Image (cartoon, rainbow, N blue to C red; front, side, top):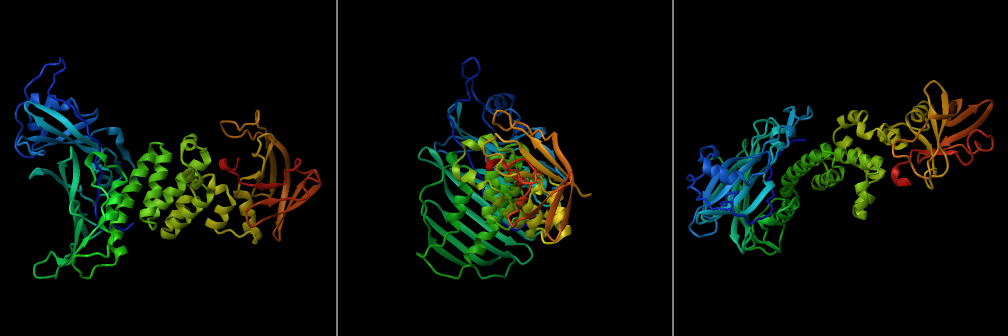
Length: 518
């Protein structure tokens, strides 16, 4: 997918109230003054390190200390920037340009000064600062984090996303949080997208307190070029976003706010098409959601991965990789009949279908033809490759061509339809070999239930021959024959098989079932 300059949004987490000045024996020890400004954690004195390290999670480390007054009490508060440091989360993956992906998270912890004590008032370990995942996987992408600062009693977190190769686009953005109403609330946001080749710039500023947005276009980073025009508009904001309540959906909500078109404007000037304005930001969010989904997928959290891939394609339906990952994850859920799906809402369960697998898979291949070759060997799609729809809709085989029909007979896993309805009758499978041989195999259910593992297809009922001519499939067993055809919906039917005693009673219709057909 082509990289574009985009607005970057990151999430912040929940708040806790703790006292970090108490030693293990319950006594109070004085905390020594910290260094001015942003200081390396390694510059802190041992007593200072001890008090803060008590509240840093296992496998995390403090990488930066920021000092300043956040609650207007004229006392220096502390923000710790912390990084996860788990070697197991650095994953080798040749699908990325760097050959690896670092899924370690990054975060902050905010402490208020209270005399010789400090109390933890907010922390986030998953969103306020982007993980190392995106830029570790892309050799062209620099670390987007620019700074975390305390100034004028507010916390400002700044990002500057740029690439050393692949695109001239870049973006910078910052978020301003103020401690008010006993919470950290987002009061300001600004983002500037620019093109380093042409110098063109586009800036959006939002004041969440006054509910006004300024959009400036026509500016240019090169001196003497550009004629900036600013449009002011009132925007609808139903609530102030609090640092402590930020979650994975907040970035999408804020994008909708800053990109909304409101007919009530304080000034008028030309602006870009709304979709084109939103598109780069949505593409960036889709890439982030896809990466998060891939991380959940690698850890076996398929339901969570499914949610994230769905969100990714909603943000950018032309993101081929996310469409492909969505198809694979639905296939896993469908094949494994994931138990945790029983606790999910009905809408998500209904989404897990072959229709949605093939919809996403076809979109991904159309957007990126290389995905076709991948789909032919991907283990996640092993069962999907055994369906008529894959052979017909993806590989393009035509049942009206005898040679291609024979290929489909060989590729598809033909099982008797309806045999899983009550779990009482024996299951029958037809196996067509390329050399003209056909086998009928059977499996019996145990106490009306499907075995936990694969069905025991170890009993061969019959061995015979088959041939294909003019779209008609003829089975021959011990001098007896039965003729059948393949329907448009992928069902293989042999109407006279029962009469000629070639197949067991009622076992003459075959297709590829899945767990949600039960």
